[in-house]
Image (cartoon, rainbow, N blue to C red):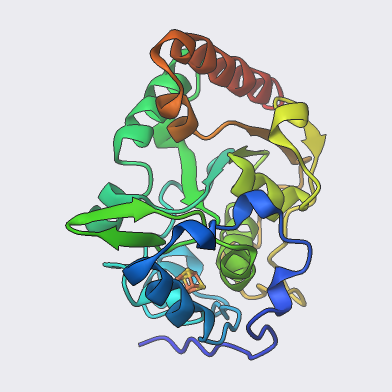
Length: 267
Ligand code: SF4
């Protein structure tokens, strides 16, 4: 088993600086068992993930299976690591796996994933040629009877999980990163980023680099091409599914339009 040793740099609360209230669950509405669940989570310490170096994507995936850096691993079924070719030109970053993804162990294979597939197809992006992952690799949820209700990951989960995303970006070294939704956008573009105002805008991006002397040295991309990398954010496909029937087509068209802007970065 690969050694995954969390450093204890980020303790409970430290990663919460600048938390957007929109990212926080409303604890006043979480009564009974929910409150107990939240409090149990809040009493656990957070560390940051420590991906191994020089193991390639498969080695990272195997190591991430054993990550215990934050409390999300425990109620979840499994780690849902990114998928796609290591030489992908496009990396799509979502928020976290959903209920279906948690059970299947693959990213974006539920209803939101099917909508994303259709949007990518309409935008002219081949999903099989893209690397698809999430900012947080375990499903955060609250249990209500038999149902598992999605809970937005907190900034502390994003911070704890960030090294896995950095390691993926370093190895894939894409030309375009697409953040799907606010959590991914804030993870990579900062907490001040606002999807509503800045979606669909291409910006230069400096991805983490692999190579000698870097955090992810000893990787398998010694011949990695040097190229510009762009980043943009758009809405999460699950948000398109959540809007009312009368607004869904427009929301879908806006998602496709943003993805087409991203495609321009590859031209
Ligand atoms: S969510 Fe990320 S940091 Fe937390 S246990 Fe899972 S893989 Fe590790």
